[in-house]
Length: 461
Image (cartoon, rainbow, N blue to C red; front, side, top):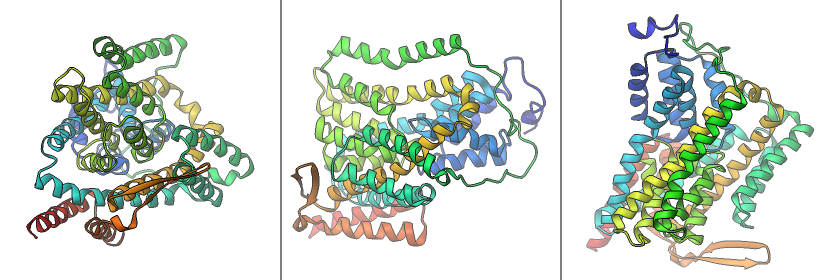
């Protein structure tokens, strides 16, 4: 702490507000605690950076978070990049953003390989028999948690319901739902200003923070700066995709996955839960990279690892490339696709922050953007509810049939194919989360044990 205190009153010659090595150690420590989705990840940064180290003020922290909420992609990782940039410039932003996802990338790569290599064993089958129902309860809890914060007006409730019906009953594409929600949010704000009412926050007690609430980064935006960052960012983003097309052909699974997840990276408003219904539909029904039930297994794995939940796309890429390796060895193809998709998913986050951060003060007071975000946030509740229905259908029942009546496209379960074990574990997970208030990790652990026990008993009988 003495080293940090000595740097509170002055800025080093290289522009760092604190020594980069101190920041690196702190970001690494944070990266190992980022379980439980964005709410838990933001809480970890709040405790470490605002309350404990006092590197950034409470309102300044919320200001940065609000900006990240305007962007597509994992807001918690973008918040880390933003604060890292404030503290140590571009190097700090890169270190914070990379360390935020690195432990999760390594862990999920190992778990994906375990699933592919031993997925049919009794141990792995039993664990997933418990994890998949637990994820249903976790996603339902996300609907309740996000809805409680976002749907503070009847008009927003109606928008959330409309989004749910559009996705579930009429199969409207996810990007269309988000775009319409943004437009409706802007229109509603003109007629009902109350929907923009935001809760007040109290500043944290303690000594003055290193970055005060009214402080802004000194780097001024300019066309030259923006052009350099945009050009470099786009080259870094798409160079591996172009290289994959040259080496493996345009029709390879690597290019298909890279282009799809590059597109998903710019429409992932509302976090991983919101976009997963879109990813699941495309990966299962359009590209055939994995089976419907496997999507929830991938999310279960992502829930057990640190880092953003959108890391589940790494699992999708791994499984999809393993089964469609082209001329490569399946394991080589799977690892390559895993890293490639992770790259195109997270590189845009750095581009969005570095390009837009100097404009954050203008965005903070922009009424139109705030109104659009309000509409998107309300729609996200419906999107997450749609994801819960998708997971429930494909894990609580063994058979699901698609029905079409004109514009209505509805997936309905075959009731006789219900899975009693999955229903029982889901009910237990619901009680643990909603009644007892257990954490995500504890619920997953208990449900995994229950699934393993149930599988062993069924094999012995």
